[in-house]
Amino acid sequence: MNDFASSYDRLPDGHPARVYMEENILIKKIFEELFRSDINEDFETFFNLFNQLCEVEKHFARKENQLFPYLEKYGWTSPSQNMWAFHDQIRDEIKALRKRIEDKIYDNILNEVIALYNSLSHLMQVEEGRLLPNALNMLSEDDWKEMREGDEEIGWMFSTPPTPYPEVEAYVHPSQDTKKRELPFSLEDRTHYDEGYLTPEQVNFIFKFLPVDITYVDENDKVVFYNRGDDRVFPRSAGIIGREVKFCHPPKSVDQVLRILEEFKAGRQDTAEFWIQFKGKFIHIRYFAVRDDNQVYKGVIEMSQDVTDIRSLEGEQRLLDWDD
Image (cartoon, rainbow, N blue to C red; front, side, top):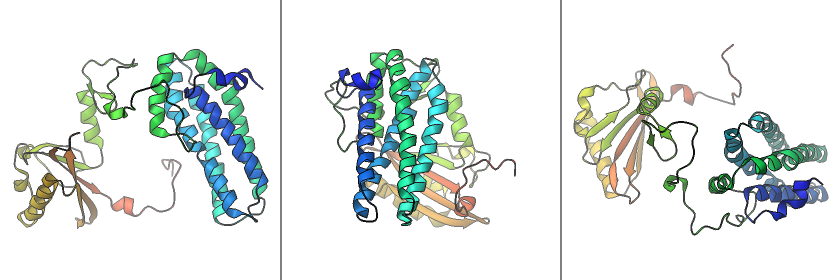
């Protein structure tokens, strides 16, 4: 047994590195029970155990979105490049095994479970022998504390959350988290949003290149913004800024617009959607009520999108088709 596996319990309860190890122990326990079960004699037990094992996705997601970014901050990018690819391989193995189970193709199922066990065993050996020990040496205590806050959003394999680390009075949702963190870029000329920092130029790029038409109407029913994309569904001009929204729609649709505003302001509805045929295209139109943290109405976002091509998609496309 490696040093970390034999000494992980010296870490405080709830420490992210300890939780990874405890999940590994759980994975091994689930496999032990899987190997003792017989899918032909007790499908429900086998399938329940398999579904518990599928929760390893949370283990992977925390590493990819939490642990790896912190390691990258200290210059160790190998896990992001190599271990992530191994995660995806295991995901494919789990997906294939699930399909066989759901299709009730049970022949050779034990060998496939063994293959999955071998893949996860190798991954856990790398975690316990290299990844977690190195992470403990590289990351600061503040790093681990910050990481735990983000772990809450993704979750764990356990049915009940691990002990809080460190002990906190109350969990703070990331959208309410105002703690200052060291960032690898300057905050000059940037604005802090719910999560992340953008310059005005970057904000403009986002709205310009989004493949949707967006119009923002404030709480006084005045149009205050629209995005000027190259392929807008409905044309807009600067003349609508500051104009009452009821004057920005054809007379035949004004009554519906006014009703939407009335329902949104009253708090009785939060969304409205329509779809129409327009110039040979299938257009999806949605309205979203905007409210602040106290649920005070702050306006409405109108979003229109040409979904003609999206509607025709079938099957899957996982590879680039640039060279076709």
